Image (spheres, helix red, strand yellow):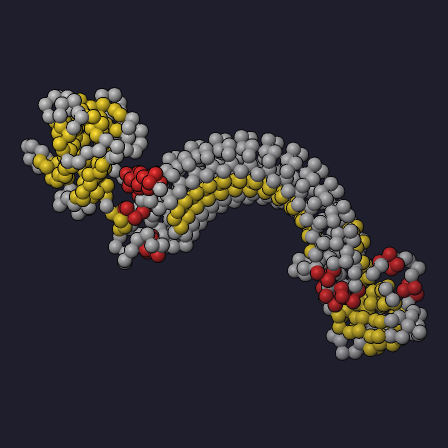
Length: 608
């Protein structure tokens, strides 16, 4: 328990020191020469050296009483601001001998000689623990000051000094919306006054200020322990994260950023900066990145060669003309759609599971080596061919709006979604795709389509083809999603095989051409010498009364030119001559469906 407490104290001390320290080289980490730390001055008769026994960091300074009874050091001058309250801190630890006091002071030079502004001393010493001297200081004028440290002790005694700091007690938060969010989160308190205690934010590791109407994140620099920052959906036009070096997760999506400097954020693992106005993004120093989303910006290029750990990359909706992902061997998903790519090489990305490269200018795409691929979207390109025979794990294939004339999906038995509309296909065979639930193949040149072996299909659009036969009898017609399902604009299609004729006529009346019938077995209707060919219907045009002769019927149904059922007649199939009355219907073209058992035939009738 004691060990854990000491560790927490050390972490707390580190987070406080990590704030903006006005003391130059106050942590004694920089030594251009071994005899003196940079930015510090020493007593000419004193002796100082570098020690690896540090309160925090890699080094401290060892002050030795080499002659007489004292030794001292002081800093360069540095500026302080009138009215600000500063926390002034130093740590000391006995290394050897005895000391009577350590004096820690701030001094300035109002005249010819420098003067002490404030001083605090310690007369207790420990060789096992670091002791802290700390005080607050609020200057009345803005001026330059220095730190002085005096040690008094016996000859050859040594004392370690480390982490000397002058830190603003308060962090300025000029954006009232930012501060109000901090108050809501319990990080700040009271009413917004433009500042927050620096000690209240220095240890915060995760901060979510999304959707808060923030336009200025000034103050974020003193959130020095921050590992996760979510500031998406605000109004930020710039942000300075150079002091937030511990960040691993950063979400700045949906703002108005025109630039983003991440050179010091080398620990970043996940970066989301989508939906901004970035024209460039340098991530060469962010070699720990595994996920990057920079979609919907104004990027013309992106260099990811240094980001070899990337597993997910989204660069879609930019203006990128080329993308080299040869070094990104760990990539599992990439979305580079909506750019200006004319070529894309994924030969080395063997771990790739999802590839979205639609809405580019690709003329070819080789995915024969991407055996883990399960999701492919290459729609809206200029592809003339697409080979998916080696991609046996493919679940979703979207290749619409290309110039593909042949597409073989017989090897893709796991396929669930196929969108190949707006191509030049003359056929599409899905009989070996039992998991398929969606098939969009409209606007092609397909002549035959059979989904009878696809029991899960519940959405199919095959309109605007050259269909002569269409078999929809898959046992799932009752569950079809009618929003996109349609079979219209196939002028050569006279019959559609379905699960239930009555259901289809009632529910799908506007999903087919008016001259097309639903049947349980279209092959019966395709016979030229069918009994329906002997039927006579007159007069045609008619003013209302219509005679039907030479055929035994169970029913006659009447549809308008929109495919809507407008009348239905139940007939006695013991007869062969019938008269029905169509009076009351508006003038126009109608289709009479003559139904006998499971077969039917459509006849066009004009009402005057």
